[in-house]
Each structure stands twice: as structure tokens, then as C-alpha cells.
Image (tube, rainbow, N blue to C red; front, side):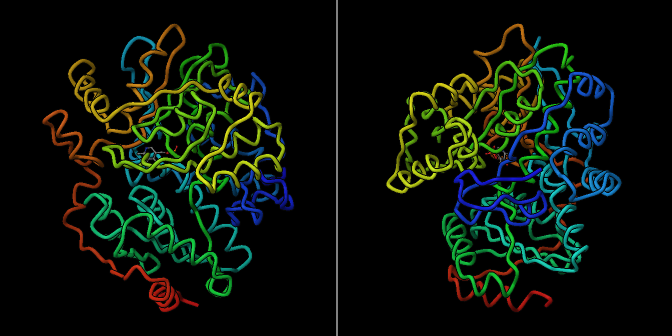
Length: 461
Ligand SMILES: *Cc1c(COP(=O)(O)O)cnc(C)c1O
């Protein structure tokens, strides 16, 4: 199993190399050379299995020689052992033929734990074997950073630095980043906004001397290992509703196109999925693109579902590559056009995308109204991202079971939930003491030199 770049100009890599590299040298994203398929019998056999067993069957064909079967089983067990629900990703019925897939039982209460916990284990194993260390630096508007810190805390071959905008993350998100006690965790409050954090991160990767010196590595959402881990819950949930003998549909709240792309991979592997619905908030570039055929950047307008406030949807490049018949040169040309703000998708390619994905958007008012309605009519308290999902799913409900992904726990976004319902959503008991734990954070100027000095000073080699 090899991985190739969506821009066609980088050598093919193994799973291990693709995972540790992140972005391809030609600027593209890694995708499998060919997506492996599972037989109907293999899918049917998942009925009643544990999440971990299904995870092994789904991911094993993608990892090649990187881990032995026993090693991989152990990594999966370690990754999901700390989740607060035995099913890992339980399915709750909302209405006839409408189900909610709860992806918020991981340590930081958002679906990013599914990918990040496994990535942490896989990095540690691969690095331990070669005796090397890496320095992981990430920028976050909240959820990715807390998930990365939880996944890498205490691992001996890794230091993890997370840059977040000072004063601009929620208190729960901040405390999840600042309260871990392990020495290899470094929460950095940057005097700036999220774009500043991302820009400084890019500067660090572009400083090749620094990058090599501290062995910089990234775990942002374009990392193939993260996409792969997200494919699993499409299988586990569909099988519990009767797949492969019965088709199911999914609605996925998304911004960076990562989670929905994992659903697209599940379908290619042989899972019978009828509709894959892209759900966006008011930052609706993905919905507009599917409607108009033009991918046009606009400014980001902050919303109550902040983890989807994105204007450049990185993982969209992966599906574009397929829509263009895997022609890397054409994808590279379109990404070049995007530098001036926009590109237009060819008739053939947009036809493929419209056949594969449906889409919709939820305004701020519609999102709040969905939170209110679901608590009143269905007895279900939703986070704002999940509320975007159920709003967009509504016109697609029918005779095929619809599974809407619930991407975060309502307690992670208490202000929006309380405004819509009057209910202050409590943290789950296992983290009820979050507000009592001491915080540890370093505040740094929005300055590359200062950040680099801090990283050099803190790492243990
Ligand atoms: C990251 C995130 C999303 C969006 O995920 P994509 O990778 O853009 O698909 C949605 N909801 C929550 C709570 C998130 O943290």
C-alpha cells in the first residue's frame, strides 16, 4: 500500500512515511494509490463486534507493513481505552429513521479524539522503533489543540507545543490545554488571533534550518492517519443499522472536509451509503461550491459553531483529485488559481462531485432554533455543530436511515447551548474537576523569533 500526492509531483510513500510527513513536498495531500475494498461478508461480520475489532478490520489494509497485526491491535486498544463510553461511538435514535452518532465520548469531548488518540499511539510506536524524537507544533482555535495535547501527553518521544490565540478560546478548551501536568506538554497563548497562530506555525515549517534542528512534525487535519481513523465509525454505525444488507445515509457537519471525506472513503471501500450530506454553517464555501461550481474564498464570519469557521477547506483537494480522474497537474493548477481567491471546477468534475455529495447550510438563527427544538421535541441536548447537522439533514430524511454526526459534547460550547435552551450543560462526571485543576501556560508575543527560542529552550534534546 503506497500513498501518492494530489499534485502528482512527489514520490510515493509508505503509510508510516505519509503519516510522519503530513504535507507532501509538492504542496499536495497524500491519498492511497488505490482504496482497498472489503467484501460484503467482511462487513456483515462486523455486526455485534466491538469498536476496536471493527477498527482493526477497516484500517488494517491501509497500513501495509508499518505495524504487525498484534502491534496494531494494541495501538487501537490504547487509543480508545480512555473513552467514557463502552461503545466508543454510540448511536442514539432521534426520530423514525434519524439517528445521532455521538462522537464526543473521548477525553476532550469532540470527535477529533478518535483520530488524535490513534495518531498519538502510532507516532510513539514508529518513533520508538527508530529511537528518534519529534517536536509537534500545532495551531488551534480550540478543539484540535486540546485533542493533540491529550493524545501526546506523557509520550516519551514527543514534545507537543500548541499555539492558541490568547483570550479567544472557550474556558473549557483553554483548561483542557493548560491543565495537563506532563513535562512534554507546552500550551502557548499567543498575543494575536487564530490566523496569527497559523501564520507563525507556517513560518516555523518554512524555516528549514529550525525545522530540521528540532525535528518539527505536524498533526493537522490533512494528515492521512487522521482521515483513516475517522473511516471506522461510518462502518460501526452503518452495520448497527443493518448494513451491508440495508443502505444508510450520513449528514456531516464539516468545515475542512475531513470528516465527510472519511465517509467518502468508507463508501469506496464498499459500505452501501445512499446520501453523503455536507452540512456547513454560515461559512458555507463547501455548500456554495457544490451549488455554483466555483470555489470562491470569502472572509470568515465568526459563528456559534466555531470549529467550522473556515474559508480554505484543505481536505477538499483530496476529492477534487478524484473528480479530475486523479490528474495531479490539473489539481495543482486549480490550487494555483486559488491564490488569487477562486477557481472554477470543470463540468465533468462538478458532475462527479454533485453525484457524490448533497449539501446544505444553517444560519446562526437556524442553528439556535435546532438546539431549542431538539431539546423540546426529542429530549436531546445538541452542541451547535451537531445542530447544524440536524438542520441540514431535515430535507434528506426519508426511507433510508439517516445518521447525523454529533461532533462535540454540548458542555464544550455552554454559552450557545444555554442561550438557546436556558440549560447550562454540565461536564461529564469524569472531568467535573476541570475548573479546579491548576493551569500552566506560557504567554508569548506574536513573533517568530520568540516562539522559536521558546521551543529550543523547552525541548529535551
Ligand atoms: C473540527 C470540528 C468540526 C469540523 O471537522 P472537519 O474536519 O472540518 O470535517 C466539526 N465539529 C467540531 C466540534 C469540530 O471540532
